[in-house]
Image: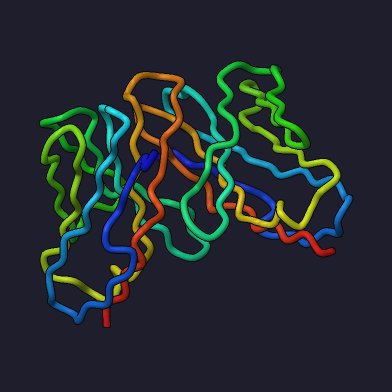
Length: 113
Length: 109
């Protein structure tokens, strides 16, 4: 009963390095989301995918790209990491129709030096 | 711009106390309001409210939504140390969730 699985759990990067965060869900959900969580700021939406084959920008998309590889997987890529991208990243999924809550993965703690 | 504001930002109570957490919002095309509990890792779902004035209840936790005044409260009665967490309020609007900054609750034994 995995739900939403994120890899890796922790990562340290140097400024300018690239990195892909992986997310997979086994609940046959249509919609998937990437958030970042910073102290005192709650969760902010980076990108989302309402259904397989579509992606849209959220509140803070700059510096990120995403790929909805198939219905199960939604990856987040940092092409050239910056210290301001140090954060905890959460992936979430939902069936995609109303009145269904989002389910979250355990997060990836990313530090950029 | 969609906005969700939670108060207080943090509070410390003793076991057995009752607490009330507040969430106010201003969003376009409101669909629902959700409460999550976050301990060390993933936020876990508590309640979803879509209709005004109907209380959702689960054990010692309850929540109610006022769509006219644009706010919700989360009540926790007879608090326990296991209730210590960050409580997040989120509003669903246009197929996206907008989160508040959260309330940090610490319950002392």
